[in-house]
Length: 354
Image 1 (cartoon, rainbow, N blue to C red):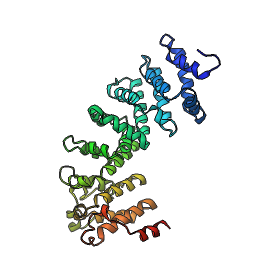
Image 2 (image 1 turned 60 degrees about the horizontal axis):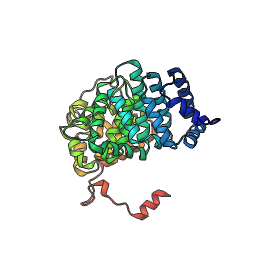
Image 3 (image 1 turned 60 degrees about the vertical axis):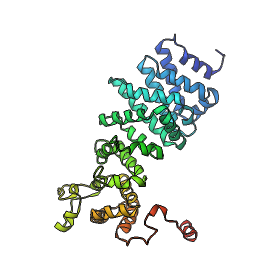
Image 4 (image 1 turned 90 degrees about the vertical axis):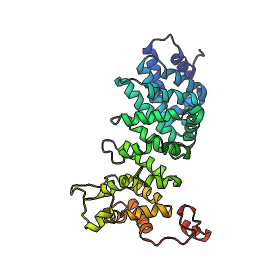
């Protein structure tokens, strides 16, 4: 061990198998402190290095002491949240350990706490585009997609915890390959996700799932499946936007069953960010003429009309008015029915940018 070199000392204390847990725990607490500040993270990058540090963290996660494991995962949460350090831990070796830890964890309190940290680290890593790409590359290797399906199943079966996995899913589904996995028509994953669109026990879970659903709506080829009987997405998106308003029988009968004769105590989604994402998802489903027809025929307009009267959030009002405009406008001329393929003339684009 070199003298007067704090980095080497730290690595030494954390990597020695024979040292007592209490000594290594003290060293891990110092390491955790370093990961919590920009100066400390720079020290790690410059004096320990990405590869050596990744190996060190993986070894700590494999320690018998659950306290040491937890310290390692707290370090990962801090590092994965920062643009300057997330890349040093987004290796296949680290990802393998993270996925194994959350899939194979026991039900002890400490294990549950570790699983929470893992879900936060995965969410943080997938927040960065390169991080999400690395995760997807890892999942697509050797049919590792089954790892993701196991993780999704764990998420469905643990409604009281692991809420940050929803954020992980929303970050990951910004990648087309991930959206295809969630939209697998044989596995019924997407249908299960919709159950959490109105989830009240955790805003983190609800927000993450609503964002995941919206991301999946960018897959235009799946719109008719999403809007059809197998998924029936539209009522799930509209219900949180609906209030207690009473409509005449003619308008009511045109609505999906789930939106007919709602209780007079019915409240709209309270979070404007979630309302905005829901509206954007419906807008995305209106990209094609066939999708617009289904949305229009479900009398979506009257739900949005009443929402517009009630809405106070400016960002929500803007996307809401855009959607209403699509629903009440005449259909575009032939050749322009698919809004995703409409080319905006350059002179109009310049006007928008001024």
